Image (cartoon, rainbow, N blue to C red; front, side, top):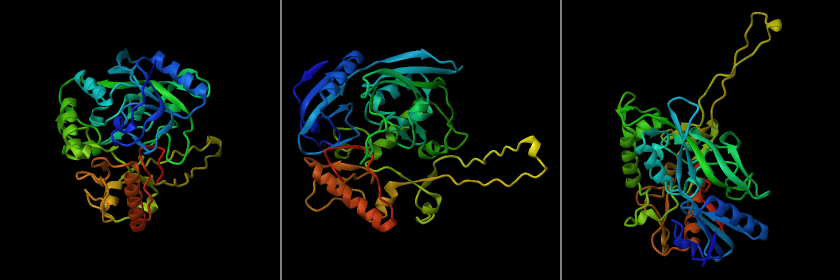
Amino acid sequence: MTEVTPVPLSELTTLRTGGAPARMFEAATPDELVAVLRDVWADGQPWFVLGGGSNLFVGDEPYDGTVVRILTRGVERLPSPRPGFTRLRVQAGHDWDALVGHAVAEGLAGIEAMSGIPGSVGAAPVQNIGAYGQEIVQTLVEVDLIDEATGDVSTVPASELGLGFRTSVLKHHYGSAPERRAVILSVTLELAEVGHDERPIPGEQLRTALGLGPGDAVSVAWVRDHVLTTRGRKGMVLDADDPDTYSAGSFFQNAIVSPSFARTLPPECPRWPVAPDIDPVVVIPLAAYDGYVPPTETVESDVKVSAAWLIEHSGLRKGFKLPRSRAALSSKHALALTNRGGARAAELAELARYIQGRVQAEFGLLLQPEPVLVGVEL
């Protein structure tokens, strides 16, 4: 591990905000990362880890704590117990999109729709990243992590991470602490060995985004290329020549609401069921069976609604900004708040609060921020 001269976090985050921390360390190997975290935790000072800096919104004041930069890299191919699948164990600091590119080059499927998502591999399970119908929960097998409470390193199966829509037990939700304070060291995924041939694409959301019919066959490389193009049109890939790139991606989460609340929204508001509506199974003991089977009650699934649609239809169009502010909605995508050059965190927070207020007044729904907020309040 190496202690380095702290630099402003505005230089290390995609939103370009944040002062310098009191201390900064860089860890290039898993052993270095474990050692520095144990030392930092023993000091009892505030801390956080930094990967790609794409999901952080940091306040303007200097951070009175320690930042640990995770610079570990590497992909290890492992056998899978399932025929036709391969496992990849990836170090936490590895670039996510580089991993997707590697998987596609190897003819492995399961994460290609998440091409272009900025950030590091270790951050991916924390918020269960996803795009176009694919989420990391669909391929994640396990993670190696270190717990703050004990300093112990353990392998934790995906089933114990509480993975839900953009959440896990590890995530720092706005206004609350994570259920489990730990840092991911490596991630193991299980991907399908599909090769480079064309094949029908599962998932209606992905097919719709790519303009494909149910029977249309394309390769994983074709999917990756077209997802990158689609994200590029929305300013949702890192591009130093595009002012819309200086964002944290989707600043607000698509909202998960009850079916009854969803029905209060305009019918044209895009929505998707969160889980399939499966009829419950009724078990009747044989000794109690009298020939009558009671009717089952079908439970409606929750509904995910488009935050971008809600923002635009509250009257805030792409490119909107408050007077004299250097923060604005992306000119390509209403869900991204962008730093148009030299914006302070206070300007972005002011814009975020204004958006929340307009959507709540129009639709009765308070949008929740997706990035982790450090030293800033909404």
